[in-house]
Image (cartoon, rainbow over all chains, first blue to last red; front, side):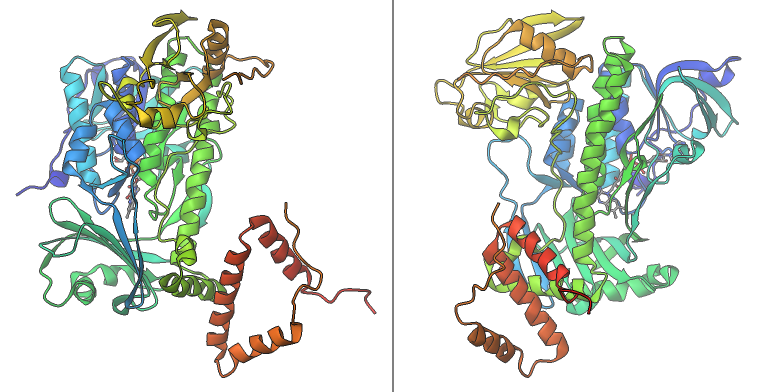
Amino acid sequence: MTRIFETPLYPYRRSADQDSSEPAHHGVVVIGAGPIGLAAAIDLALQDVPVVVLDENDKVSWGSRAICFAKRPLEILDRLGCGDEMVEKGVVWNLGKVYFGDRKVYEFNLLPEEDHKRPAFINLQQYYFEKFLVDRVLDLQAAGKPIELRGRNTVTALDAGENGVRLTVDTPDGPYSIDAGWVIACDGAGSPVRSMMGLDFVGRVFEDNFLIADVRMEARFPTERWFWFDPPFNKGQSALLHKQPDNVWRIDLQLGWDIDKEKEKRPENVIPRLKAMLGDDANFELEWVSIYTFQCRRMEKFRHGRVIFAGDSAHQVSPFGARGANSGLQDTDNLVWKLKLVIDDKAPESLLDSYDDERILAADENILNSTRSTDFITPKSEQSRVFRDAVLDLAGHFEFARPIVNSGRLSVPAIYDGSPLNGPDVAVMPARSRPGAPCADAPIADGWLLSHLGNGFRLLTIDADAPDHIEIDGIGIDRLALSARDGRAPALSERYLGEARSAVYLIRPDQHVAARWTAYHEENLRLALRKATGRARQEPDQEDDER
Amino acid sequence: MSELQLKANLSRPDDFYAALLAAHEGLSKAESDALNARLILILANHIGDQSVLKQALSAALAARHPAGGNT
Ligand SMILES: Cc1cc2nc3c(=O)[nH]c(=O)nc-3n(C[C@H](O)[C@H](O)[C@H](O)COP(=O)(O)OP(=O)(O)OC[C@H]3O[C@@H](n4cnc5c(N)ncnc54)[C@H](O)[C@@H]3O)c2cc1C
């Protein structure tokens, strides 16, 4: 049986561009068909922005990589039209157990809040994740959308000018050149584009190695996340066991710094380690074995003129907390609508600088969280180990110490507080839906709130009057009119009204709140839309605090 | 913001000090370090207020060197 990661999904085909005497021009070129590049391209194609994706490979991700996908990225995938496949295939989990030595010190339930379409997390192999995205690209292509995916097209040189970028691309038939109005560089943590442009990527390397194995086995373990500090089968180190679809289990074993990686990777050394953990009678087959060293780092700026970095090329985190792919998807969610407005001449190029403002804030939050988790899991000084072990000892006895245990703070979306795009707020409305926050889902009369938001600007009104459609500076805004009066929408009311009796929200194409009021005034909307599209001059603060 | 209490506040300072030493008696250096760490965490949780805890950290760091003139 050929497995999906061994199958060329977008095999090399000669393109007409290779026979053109002058470099062909493309509006947007995405470099890299990993999860982030594919998501960027799908988003652009959905908005009818022509896009070409180049990847040096023609297959999905190789090796043990992402497995945990969080609610917010699943909602983004819904918007991109491929959330269902992921969630149907994925494994939903809520329970985690933490062991210290040979004792369970506590267990936690993610207790996902009710009344959301999507679960808090699913586990899904990255190769499935990418496969479903590639399927979506092919569907869009079949539906006539302007999207092209070119396998075995390696970008080898890049010349970035003020109004565009020339790329040199190597193929099995030799090199060719193309011109791009804009480049989104999603070429991964080792980003060749970053090196070609001589850009920095600074941060911290954690001096530790992790053996990451994916094994197939019929196991009696439940669908839970099990994390061990200092287990008997991996003395002085940590371990993780987590379930994926198709009876594949993810195992992480911390190995320490001074090891012989080649030796540790050999099956004759890996198998005894796994048997010590899973039991001598465990019957498993190795799918992948890799050894990783983790780092937390980011570029100083993600946008460099016409070249914009997204995903691992822009920022890299250790996997504790599952913030890599999860945050990369939020990068392109943030970027694509802005780029579309700029390309359509409906917003100034400077709108793209807000991508830096908002996503660097998010990257710093992710780096902070995964650095702290890594420091807890792999204490680097005698005292940090003393405190770490003290927390774990106390956690077995007292409730207070459990929130200090840090085996990964699971990915939650950033709220863009302080973003230059944010408009007015209303103090008595719930803080979770303040300007800059991603909209929380809620059940509404015909399905889910989030399936009615996104892709364009929306005016969400709750028990408030407003026009059903309004056109401002060439940008159309459709209204979604809801009511919370009959008491049948408690989640909507709790998440969007709070103490207010009515609400008007301006919601961005990425489903983040731009501004909110208690009543509709066209002039306020006009100003807020200007601000949200990067066209605001200094304006007096307009507070809207009536109830 | 609450102020860290740096005036004498222990109701029975000698008794507390004796109890602290007694708790460490017979422990190895590693066991003592672990006990201290657990104690710090328990006390920190009792205080709770992050600003008070930060003042306490600064006060502890500042007292590294003897106070007063350098005679
Ligand atoms: C062990 C491990 C566990 C992880 N767990 C999680 C998790 O649970 N959840 C999570 O969200 N994240 C996790 N991650 C992180 C996740 O794998 C990455 O964040 C994600 O793959 C980043 O996607 P990307 O598209 O930015 O880059 P990549 O997936 O690295 O894709 C880059 C693409 O660019 C292509 N490319 C490179 N150079 C060129 C070139 N010159 N020309 C053309 N194409 C090029 C490559 O072929 C590749 O397809 C984990 C990572 C590891 C290692």
